[in-house]
Image 1: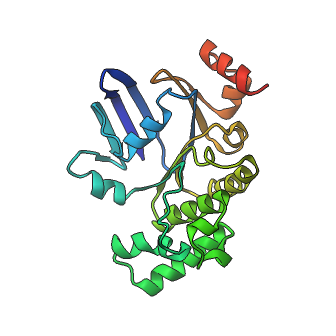
Image 2 (image 1 turned 90 degrees about the horizontal axis):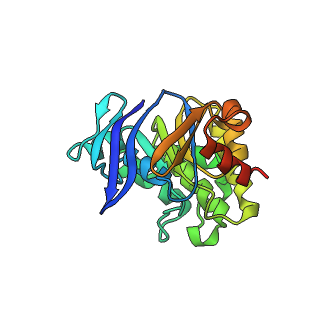
Length: 240
């Protein structure tokens, strides 16, 4: 579903991503971890062209992502859940979910609302359909953001540290929704610091450091028998 070849990204003179090669299969759950500043979020933003690669290629479902076709390819293939929930504050929860299906997919309002209600029920927030984002907790807002991503009916969902802006007690409610989602045939790429989630959900974990993929493997390999010394040092600090 996703193929990245020779990807480089510079911000000025800062070389943020260094010759990244990565493939993600259909239905795979890929978790990306690493220290702050390692390039994780930049990589995931390059996948849907929120950041334009300096060089290299990104293919989504066999289509090469370019500056000209990025909007159409991304719109037809992937949705993204951000750190900051990015909900429209002047719209109700239901309106936030129906906006994209109605505007981009030309879905009739009644059909879009019926679909949105189904996804709100899946994330446990059906009773909040008429609420505004400012009246929801951070965990609830992020669950709405996940429901909004699901409502686009895309086969790829990208998560950029979806729990990092939440109070600790709200983290698990969002992770529980993502764990349920991982049981479906959706391709998930998730940047996270939640190691328990990575162990439970990932088909594969990649560790990034200084703009490069340092290690890749199953959760069992990664957490129980990592090979790279940088990976071992990172895990020794966060798994105490």
